[in-house]
Picture 1 (cartoon, one colour):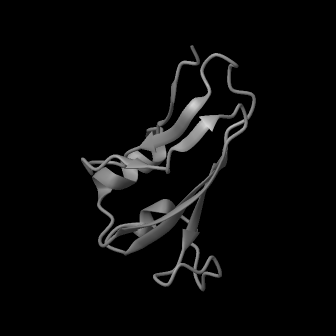
Picture 2 (cartoon, rainbow, N blue to C red; picture 1 turned 180 degrees about the vertical axis):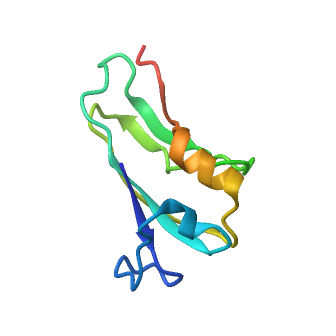
Amino acid sequence: MNIVPVDENGSPDLDWYPEDPKELIDQRLDFVVNIFKAVDLPQDLCRDVYVEYSFYLDQTKYRTDVMKGQDRNPEFKYAKHHTVNIVTKMLLDYLEKELMVFRVYAQANV
């Protein structure tokens, strides 16, 4: 898993990086969430695996495709470009103090 700051076109080659996170306030923020794979899932909990997450106040649950079948090391190859049009102090506090939670779901092997 990786979160990469990008420009509005999705390129990681940024012209500007803030010295202080407060410089992001009132600016646009773009980033890509990459979920590459899971490793060494329990043998009895590795069928039809997917990963789900949400970001900040967005009620949307973002998720990878379901990796059909039994696989202890599923490769998701997931990438999602997110855009925040205006960074607020509240969002900045979230980014500095909170955690993004990624949940791995699977069917039990019976």
